[in-house]
Length: 201
Image (cartoon, rainbow, N blue to C red; front, side, top):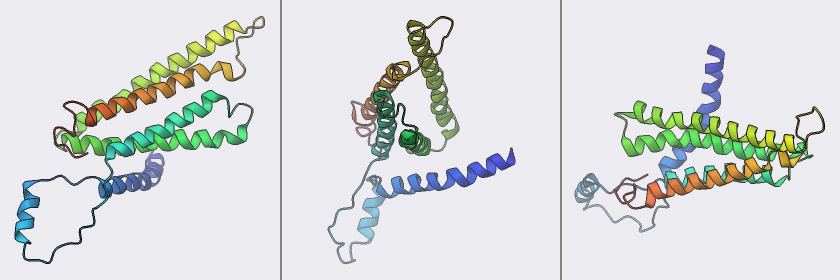
């Protein structure tokens, strides 16, 4: 167990730091009273150059990460990988990178929105949702596979061969990822969303 934990520490740490640091550096800066006080205190200094700092919201990174998963699902559903095992690394990289980034970014977003006081509760609630999603999509995948296998059944055999066995599931998964992105966009920029409430994500 300790070797597993130590390995996870060394593998997940660099990815977490990359996304954490990158999103912190590029995140918009909240306009607070302290900024105004600091500006008043430093009024005697020469003016700063007027170059505007580029900012990218953490939600943008989150959606881009989800788009990696969506692209992987579309490639799988399209059959571009079927009978080409040498191309599977593309799907594995896209979905794995997107999934890993989600688990690096989401705790940051939870902390920014709801603070650290109740982080355990808030993150715990959010972290339980993937288990439900995995259960749901596992059932969908097995039902689609079984239905196609039964329709192409040759005697006693209940195995399914080819793209038809899984394409419907992965098209639906791609649609599900798109719906998730729309939900995040609404939470961020929709009526009563984080942006409207002044939460700098």
